[in-house]
Length: 403
Image 1 (cartoon, rainbow, N blue to C red):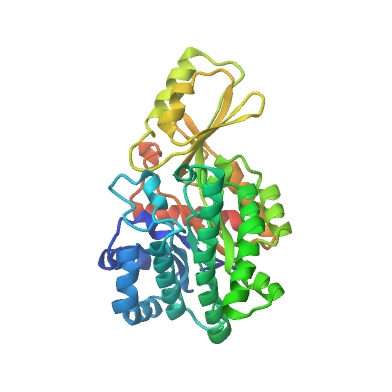
Image 2 (image 1 turned 45 degrees about the vertical axis):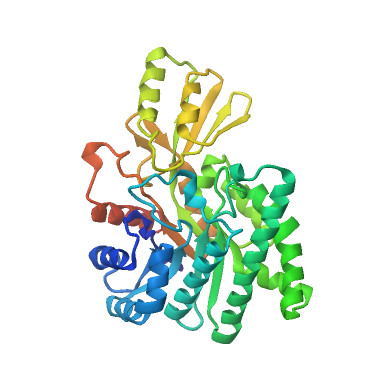
């Protein structure tokens, strides 16, 4: 739907689906009623999540049918979550969510399929995007030399997409961008990493590649790259990194890097009081322990009394340090519901989300905003609703805030 000139929806990765049939079944079951409740008289956008298997099937066998169904339901796809390649539910995911990374042909083929799907669904003169992994996972890269090789390999693959996107842009007047999504412990984990990659690898290597492959001059090549490779600003991820939205967005803008999509999300947080009792430690650590589960990575960053950041690749590695009196604020990668700021004995980074929403009101940051919540069990029992009602509640909360 258009909300204050934003294309707005929720990300369908909340629905467990691997094949195209499973994916379409969830869309049929949820979207018509959600649209009826949220925007009954105007078209509603979809933040579509497709696995590689589902994308291939849709592209090869079901695209005309899906396009017709979307038209009948007054729905349209304005963004695709192309981050998780395979199964995202009911299995141990952890660091496998970053595989295949951008050094591989598998990631390139998957993303190319998503590009063709979007170009087949889009109307002329419109814009869509694909959020994707922040290149690779840093713990897979062993040294600085290997890191440089990985950055170069990722750039080569991304430039293949850029050439296709430029062709679609110029011949069909359909604008599609790939939104790199910084995340803690990835090669692009914050604003500084992202700007460094664009400055040191994506632009210089990418410009050379485009010049060599298509004869585009350097100035035009730079414009094309910055048009089609953008950033997905996930509020949870940037909050876990303790980044200030004003500063991050300003630095990206100064570097010429566009934000293709904002994902509205909140992380878990604990602020330690000045006086800490043994009872407080026991209560809070027990509440936190409940989220040390085996499916997803829950990167945790802790700020100590001196402002130093301590990074842990997963919550179970951080928890043994919970009683450390110098560790004052904890933030953990956990996409919790956005409409509350406390959950029993825990808090969230909702204030960072509210601040970002206030910036969206006053600045042109992006055209695309999408809710990404997939952790409902954090809610107290008396606050829990069924999944469909939960999605509607989240969307209505954002609508009310942005009014």
